[in-house]
Amino acid sequence: MEQLDTYILEIIEAKKLSGLTNEVKVSLIEDLKAQLFDQVDRALLEELTDEQLDAFNDRMETTDADDAPHQFLVEAGVDIEKVTARTMLQFRELYLQSSEERQQG
Figure 1 (tube, one colour):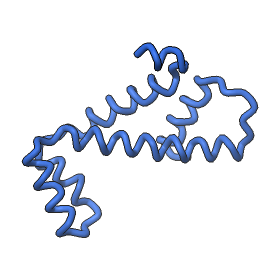
Figure 2 (spheres, rainbow, N blue to C red):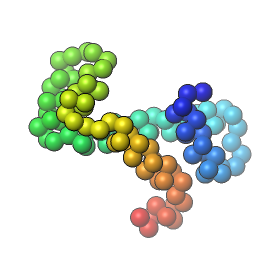
Figure 3 (cartoon, rainbow, N blue to C red):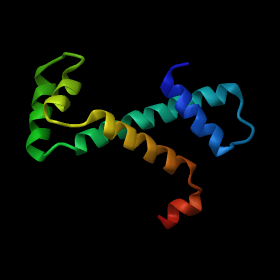
Figure 4 (cartoon, rainbow, N blue to C red):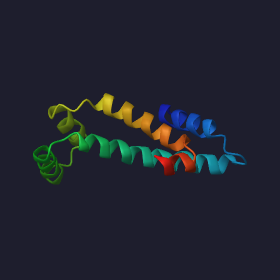
């Protein structure tokens, strides 16, 4: 199991959901992982100025290199590790909140 799966599994276990079968747990891990990736991507792009975001979009339209997004963010001065860690912690906190806590926030 990769590190991110382990992280998400720890969040699921901390939530203390009852009655999860292995099949449901695997599906939940995949769903939460996709949500986390989306949130990290969004948080990274939010670090860019409007001009940088336009340049990012232009570069993504003209290149098919797999590392192009990462390389652009590094060149733009985005602290990818810091933003990713912060987003992961926020994701965990939100997931572990009760629905009442979310409504209050």
